[in-house]
Image 1 (cartoon, rainbow, N blue to C red):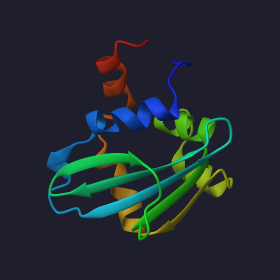
Image 2 (cartoon, one colour; image 1 turned 45 degrees about the horizontal axis):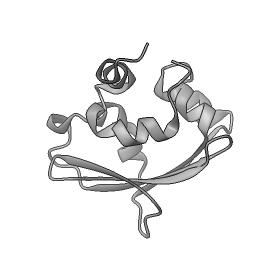
Image 3 (cartoon, rainbow, N blue to C red; image 1 turned 180 degrees about the horizontal axis):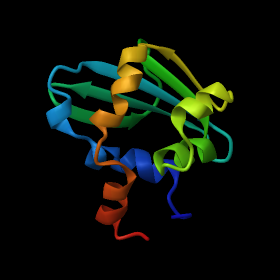
Length: 120
């Protein structure tokens, strides 16, 4: 899975989204990625839909900051997000209840993204 990039994940994150778990969720999530593949991404969840765009949100409900490699490791299950936070490799500000809900909102996860892309 070494060819999976942050850009690939963000451009295909909608495929991992589980709308059935997001019925009452209205949120703007900012992702600030540093390191080898820096960038800013905005994830908007509203009315059971998810939209991901490159950029910066003015009023995010939740903001994450992580290095690209750590982010990909978390998404692939190689790095536990709570452990990453405790080690200072993941920072977040904002709605902690929303942060805890993210695994259910994107329950299809990386395996689903991988299957859809035909990647190993």
